[in-house]
View 1: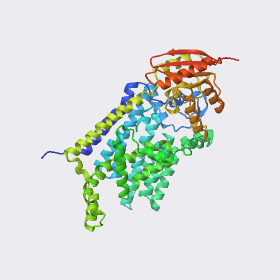
View 2: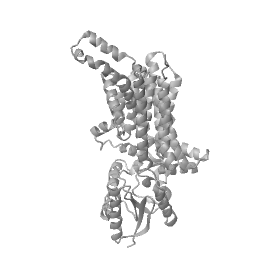
View 3: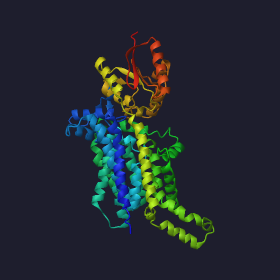
View 4: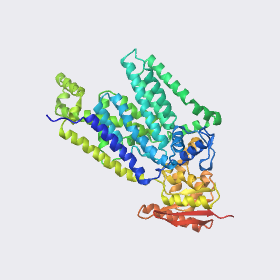
Length: 547
């Protein structure tokens, strides 16, 4: 008799190995932090220079912004650079993919506790690890906070879930270990990232609603919240003593609740970034299966994150979607296969057939992987997802600061007085995915009026308006458009940076950039101080003429 593979162990190993591989590949290629991280890079240096006491402000981008960001990831990056003697840029390159990889086994713990089954949890972990484009924001330089917070969110959810599950099964149960670890990891999540802290609270509230809705459960939930409040008090207490509530009230208004298209958001949550939408089918199958069985915990884990913070909803919804995909493959599809021939008799309300359907629903459908075809389908699906992740990683690799841009910024640092006012027109409409905007203040020593990072603590409700204004700026193809942006926002500037990619890279952006550069040069208000056609783009910098 041929021995069957240990599918739960095999799938978990595949998830960790290949999931880690796709997470480390972009860093291996770029050798420079992906996309963002410049603000945290500055803050880590300031934290070290201040003897690891929280500074009141950060000088990032020449502004006195409140040093209000949850500081745990910044502390970690600073300690690795100082104590570990690791170059700071290397920390921002390698720490995010490491943290994102550690999230894979952490997710397995959570899904195994929730699904109460090793195979379903392992398959869910495989989908979690290899969902294309689901981990990109965790790999970027800013992942020193995002990926760290996400890791602690998973561990917090696991220990809160186990605490309520044990309490539900044993009315006399009391685990000080689970209770203490729930408080610890919830606190670490709050101290890592603002959106993650909010989503952790929402996740824990859903778990309490489904598993701990008793007087004792309510008391324990209150005690956990109280413990988190006390453990995080040194951070938020310091910020409030220095700046009051204003930074937190401002940040709470940047979740895009007022502008979100809710129908589009919920539809887009089901997208998984694939060219072949295999996971989309599994997600819908798992969702309908959960609703049919009247198990509403997983669907709630889709709804609540979107209501709390639409901007971060997709990454949190991935937790439920990964488990739903496993249920779709192991439960929904076998159920459909076995019940389809009986559909006409089901509608006839035959008591015997209804009993058979209930028996099928209660089966442990591990047998699907005991067949050679079932096992091959799972492995083929893993290969397809791995390839799709590789294709999307190619796009991710191109969201990093180029050597040409670093060279131009170094020239500005060497040849201009510091803190000159710049506007950067790079053609990238979403400013939070524009590495030039984020890293420009770090390497040039100048002030960018078009950089949005850090302003969530000061702009409040105007943050979304500024985001939209910056998208309009990046589409400018003549000087009057730039001037309208400056007049509308009240932002003064003396220099304009224009990035023009090669024709092969982006013909439309190339034409728009050349038109803008020509329009500025012909305006007679500006002169060219830097103009180089480098390996991947042409960078032109204009200076306003004194009147």
